Picture 1: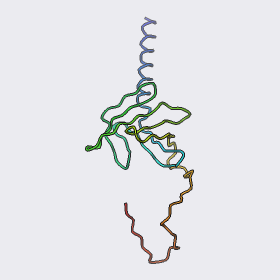
Picture 2: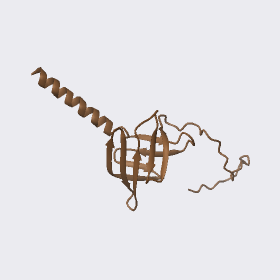
Picture 3: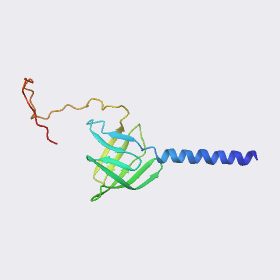
Picture 4: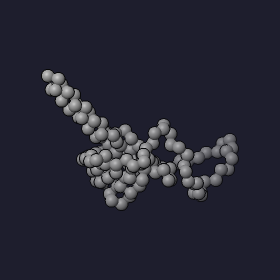
Length: 136
């Protein structure tokens, strides 16, 4: 009787570990630590990527790495996520975009590690009656 109970508990623990591993990307969000840019987010049934919510059509987990096939209704993409190394994962999208990412663990993004040298916006010192048009 003790052997059967031990075996049942062992199986339950192993199944629980597999379930946790299979969902380890669920509700995680990833950024490129070199540029500070937000890259991708994973939920239970969706992937947030490229300013859109994509449905997960297929997902497999193997040795801590993942592969996904995602679709937005008109387009399909393949995503490969490497196992964690030094708290980072390499995320490859459609065998084209490959980025080493770190998880976002705070409620806000940290400051950008690279200087923003974009030009075009100049602060004119806000004056009463000024207006602005936001596009995008």
